[in-house]
Figure (cartoon, rainbow, N blue to C red):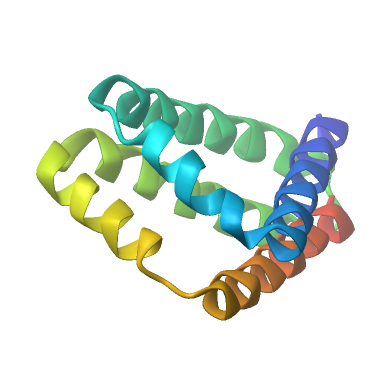
Amino acid sequence: MSIAVSVIGWLIVAEGILFLLRPELLGPIVRFFNRTLWMYALSILRIVLAVFFFLGAMQCRVRGVIVGFGILLLITGFAGLIIKHQMYNAILQWWQERNLTTVRFVAAIVMLIGAVIVYCA
């Protein structure tokens, strides 16, 4: 199960690299996911990933970090199911208005988070 956590970490690193190299892709991706069905699908995906983190934590190097990320994913997953589409839309609109430097900075942080997950797995 720690392999699944490691794969998730590598996917997060890849996402960070993608937006670091091509930050202009954020706009079209945000527009694609700005639908109620996708909003709920992403929230359910976060909850499923949290379950993977909880199940895999006992086999990982640094259990507390993996459990912490699992808790964060669980909270954001349930929050996504609770909030209304208008609020979700406002958050996505805010992200679309960020400049490319901000997107690159956040992408670097995402890469770092993915690397921490890979290391802890």
